[in-house]
Structure formats: C-alpha cells, structure tokens
Length: 112
Length: 113
Image 1 (spheres, rainbow over the protein chains, first blue to last red):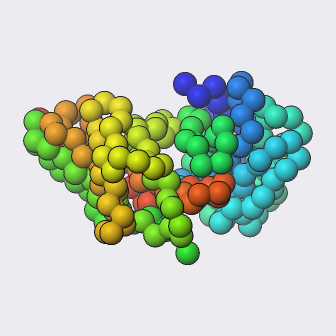
Image 2 (cartoon, helix red, strand yellow):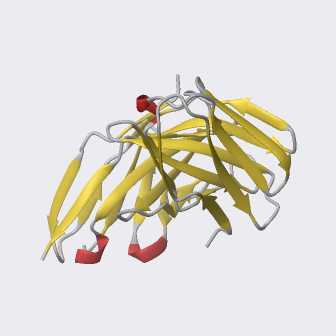
C-alpha cells in the first residue's frame, strides 16, 4: 500500500464539462504523477510534479491542467472534457527521481 | 526518443511451465528498468527493478528478470507458472536523472490450469 487515494474512483460526465480528479498521498513524497491508461497505448504521462507549485508536462498534456498547492495533494483538471479523454487515470508517487513509482488504484472516467 | 516495446500482446502458458514475458527498451544512457503487474480493475503493482549491478534481478512472487545490455532487453521470467499469475504485465524504462518512466503497451499473461 503506497498510501495513495484517488477520488472519485468512477465518474461519468458530459462533453464540455470540467472535471477534477484528486490524488492524495499520506507519506509526503516529493514526486507525483498523473498517467492515463488506454488499450494499445499502455500508460502515458499527462503531468508530473516535483514539489509544491512545481509541475511539468508529460507526453499527453493537451486538454489537462494540474495543481499542487500542498505536498499531499495533486489535482488533475480536464478543462473541457471530450470523449477522447474517456480513460483510466492513475496517480503515482516516487520518493525521488529514478526511484520506483507506486500507483494508486485508478479513476475510471467516462465522457459521454 | 525513449521507448519500450513488449512484442507480445498475449502469452499463454500451462500451469507449472516456465514463463517468459518479453521487453526491449530504447533509452539514452544508463536505463532504469521495471516490471509491474496489473490485476483487473486495480492499479499497477511493482514487481522488480534493475538500476545497476547484477544482471539477474529477483522480485516479488518468484519472478525474476534478466537485463541484457547488448540486446537492450529486460525479459520477465518465472520457473513455474501459477494460475494466479494471470494478469497484465507492464515493462517500464527510465533514464538516469529523468523524472518519468516510459511504459510498454502491456502483455496479458494467461496461465492455463
């Protein structure tokens, strides 16, 4: 158990609405990540954070924004949800760069 | 560009037989290599990693992986498969000094009783 909680775990939303997914960790790890998992693509990095207010883009960041105002929370926002953003979203943490990444249980998002 | 390839979408093996799940990588410099397992509707669970040192890495649940620098491979192995090993397996690679891992597309392992 990596001490990661994702919420909501399941959500159905309509096209064009904003959606925020929350990741909460209990162990004050510096690095936090948001990935999406899609069949045939494996996991792809959306955004990551290396400290409070320090974030950077991953390979599929278009249409997503993130915020980290506290060490323990990393929020992923879909500014205007589209059907192509229907996916499973995983939050992950790492103690330091190059170290093992540990994953949360996932958030299933369906955009209709 | 960094990338990870898992050439087999599906691997079937009989219970008790040895299993191999293949992975090749393309990473600049010295790679960090990982294997994760995912059960249905769950997150990815860490199995093992290679950072440096012995090319044969032992991990959880009797799994091991062999790092081969010349072939840029990191195949996952287990001497005797269990039905409970049936799951989706992901190989991942990172680069020294980088903050991200690149994942393969996954291999679904089915162990047949």
